[in-house]
Amino acid sequence: MNPQVKVDLVQRRLSPSAIKDIGGFIGRRFALNAANRLGTFDVEHFVGLVEARQHTDWWWLGEQPGKWLEAAILVCRQNGDRVLEGRARAVLSRLIASQEPGGYLGVTARGVRTAEMPMRGMDAYELYFTLHALLTAHQEWSDAAALAAARRLGDFFVDKIGLGKAEFWPLPKGQTIAGHPSHCGLEGTLLVDPMMRLYLATGEQRYLDWCRTIIANIDRWSGHDSFSNLERVAAGQIGIHQIQPKVHSHTLHMNLMGFLKLYRVSGDESLLRKVRGAWDDIAAKHMHVTGGVSVKEHYKAPCDLPADGEVVETCASMSWIQLCQDLLELTGDAKYADAIERLLWNHVLAAQTCDGDGFRYQTPLNGVKPAGYFTGPDCCSSSGPRIIAMIPTLLYARGPEGLYVNQFVPSAACVPLDSGQEIQIRQTGDFPIGQRVRIEIQLAQPETFALHVRLPAWCDQPALTINSNPAAAFTPGRYAVLRRTWQSGDVVELTLPMPFHWLRGSHLQENLWCLSRGPIVYVLDSVWFDPPAEQALAAGPWAVRLDPAHPSADLAAAPTPPNALGPACRVEAVGPTGQTAGAVMVPFTNVGFWYRNASDRLDPKAPRYRYAVWLLAAGGPQRR
Image (cartoon, rainbow, N blue to C red; front, side, top):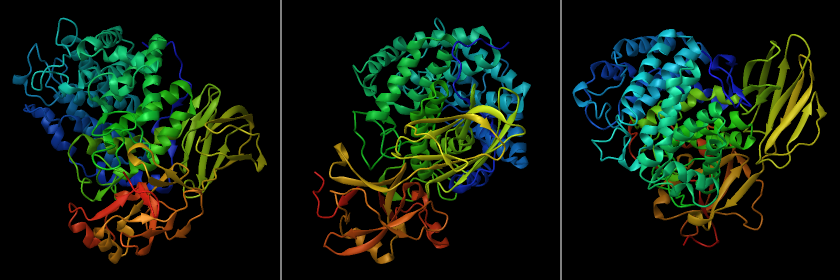
């Protein structure tokens, strides 16, 4: 039975199977993620933990099969990798075969689970990903057994958790079934997100009723009125960091995605208002210049965004991108696609090793490396591959009036229109190395529809042509809506000027500067220095020479290192004793490089190379 929804999506995402020929820098990183991370990860070991069910420790391990399985399904649906698909189908079969009659599908030992505590503390978080993976297997493979297993797992939650049953009380670690006690129950209530997806897939009323009950009790279970406080955030009365103590970024995002799914079904505008209010507060006061969010996994005081230390958790990046995409599809507001673009081209890829074989837990804007790039198996080392696997679903969408181009990545897509005709769209160009995006349309017969092309808010003067003829003026930060009768072979060309620009920092970055170009943030990275310059770094802080009165300036080009995203540029660095040296700056997304030859990989855990996004200006005021 298909459930009735009261709110239609403005954009509907495409299956990854509709996306082909992903190219450019992102295409390379996507392929490396598939081959060197998903293709080599020993997921079978963790499936064995599910089958054995002997785990009693709080520490999470049971999330690994679900995250890997969903990522592998998305990747092999996009690239047709039969070997990866074979492994994924085998993992799915083993998981389904291991499911207990009552529906439980985690790693926790049977002796630990009781009527009062039917799950171990981290089970809710871990099974969140298992349920999503089962639903993705059903969605992408039409796998009836996966949907049946998802139903059984959903029934387990309905049977075991709720009023008068086990509840998400903020009890001490070892007693709560909601993970971290400091997360105030939100690490349990996040299950609303996959449970609402289960309802949308089945139409079974019990899943919807359960989700309503869970949300209705968040205030009581959190002990801090966390759900109601979101209304105060939306009204501008408090900040997101004040809804409860130590607001955990990743867990909050997962709850907000559940609220949006219930909004679709119920039409309850207060749910959308809460989520949009939270998003606006985060974007305005808690987002780093790279688009990343979180400090030590949390939302702290407004603009408390240190450049170094434990910042921008990869898990938080994953759920932030998903939340932005959900809001984009519900509202059609281009600002959510802009946020995805900034985070994707900067912090997501910076957290990934340049070979795609690992992900960093947290990735400071100013730090050292390669320390931190060999995490795992933990939450972030499995969230990173899941983000990269989702990239194809971020690029395009279809809508009632046509199709959308959301992200600028060389690729092709087959988009079905409501008329039944399929449009072949191919995107080429040199963005973001250059400023050109070319979109070619192929279709069997002419048809009238609207092509929505995002005009990023960061670009003041975008130029748009159709078959070399200038299109009308459009507003940055919105979609250019190109409605016409399209012919096969029509070409849209978008030009996005991206001059270099020095951004002056504020708050914790007072008297520091950041080099940007379009959505790209640059880093001064000593891995590209000559050996003498590396040694000189130990003598004290270096600065860069710039003119604060004219922060927009052309910089001398420098050769882009092999396999790195360009363009690289050259700046003049000034040392602590006044010595000067030419230095190369590259996009921050390249920070996952830490070696220049094979011997450098022999000692991966030694912090050898310093890097910095936020820089001192030579001759300017120093940091306070």
